[in-house]
Amino acid sequence: MRRLGRAIRRTPLLADLPREVAVLATIAFFVALGFGILIPSLPVFASTFGVNAFQAGLVISAFALVRFVTAPLAGILVNRWGERTVLSSGLLIVALSSLVAGFSQSYGQLLVLRGAGGLGSSMFTVSAMALLLRVTSSEQRGRASSAFHGGFLFGGVAGPAVGGLVVAWSIRAPFFVYAVTLLVATAVSLIFLSRVRLHERDEADAGSNTNKREELRAALKNPAYQAAIGSNLITGFVIFGLRASIVPLFVVEGLQRGASVSGIGFLIAAGVQAIFLLPAGRMADTRGRRPALLFGTIASAGGMALLALSDVAANTLGTAGLAGVTLFLIAMAVQGFGGAFMGSAPS
Image 1: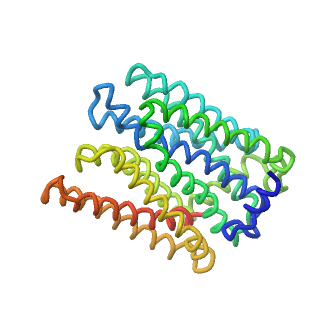
Image 2: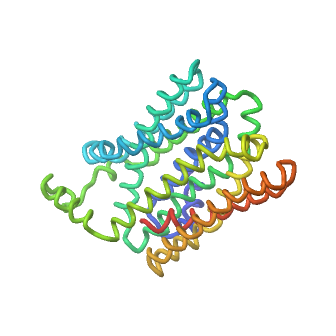
């Protein structure tokens, strides 16, 4: 295990970065592996309860909304208990909610349980990013962020690749597999994140609450920080609000294709994003965050435009043709390309 860990840290994406970055990337891989298996089938599973497309999309939106609302609480918990405890607890909450959601007997139960998982996801995300920013220097953060997102993306590549086999077993099976991968991620965090190191604090971090509030107000007035918040908001809206919730239903109802086409699209997006992660991180560190952010924003917007055109092509040329599906897959690839820069630049 130690040899494997050293080999992982010698990869170009993790070279010369703190050990914690490799651990966080590994955790992210297992989280995204299960998420990639679940997400293409989640709206389809919700629709089995006889709800419309809007209500099916709400299952994913509820998860994202709770993440957003509870993010300040997660930050408070990190300051009080430390990254390791909050990160592990958050993963356990998502694992438990996903396990129980697999037994849902109504749309309401599914909606509530997915919303509850959003709290755990918020705890995991905030604590992981807090740790990532604390253990890296400003010159390393672009590559460190790329490595962290790389874990998500490699898991996102593997997830849809095996998701079809899991769904073929049972439409509820992805929930249980997701819970297992989250438990593995929890074990990695508890074993490889040292309690002592994570509870060390610099003297600058030991200031009063008043100083921390003043620092927060100063940060909120910083145009660069405002841009980072705005880009993260847009990225979350596109990925969780549109791509994750609408695309699976769009493929089935708009393009009139099976759920497997949706899985292929997610696989392509994650694969392209993984390929360009390292160049995106280097660009953010060497040429600045602004050029990388603009590059990613333009590419992501172009991908969304192509996604809309795929529906036009399908309706104009007929769903039996390949034009709509081809444009859809190209759109997902372009969005993956833009996502590599959108994920690295804000750090």
